[in-house]
Amino acid sequence: MTIRDIVLFPDDILTTKCEPVEEVDDAIRELIDDMVETMYDAPGVGLAAPQVGVPLRITVIDPTAGEEEDDLHVLINPEIVEAEGHLSWEEGCLSIPGVYEKIDRAARVKVRALDRDGEPYELEAEDLMSVCIQHEIDHLDGILFLDRMSRLKRRIAVKKYKKHLAKMKQAEDEEGDEEDSQ
Ligand code: GNR
Ligand code: NI
Image (cartoon, rainbow, N blue to C red; front, side):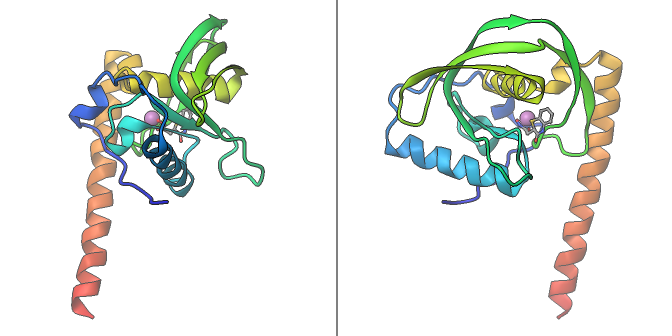
């Protein structure tokens, strides 16, 4: 298993509508294993294939990430078949680090997907799991949580993100300088 690089905003793949998986084969399972390792390493509670540069409809979700018990879900070609209620949850995104904002979503969803063996299954979710499913399916449709903010909040969020990115780059450069001088 390999930890893959996470694609950062703005990158065209994050606004691309991803293609369905036609056959769940060993290559797809290897991608899934890498996505799981990348998600836990980040750490994050979900990851979509376009976030590791692959435009396919695959996502992995573990709303307990960081806790001891694992609750890992693999969703291939996921489709929301029922949605009800409303909630507002503070979301973050591994492709837009440094930004956290409340986003309105359905409170409960029922989703149909294939598992890592290519078998169809259904899942009902509420709270964080429901939010994650909707956030990840958005990624597969090329939609970011920035796109679900008001224009003003989005503008503030993008500014905040650019500042955060500049700080991350500066920290990396300083680390590099230290290594150079050793
Ligand atoms: O790690 C993540 N946390 C999170 C928190 C609230 C709502 C959604 C998420 S998903 C995010 C990881 C990610 O970017 N997935 O695409
Ligand atoms: Ni995300």
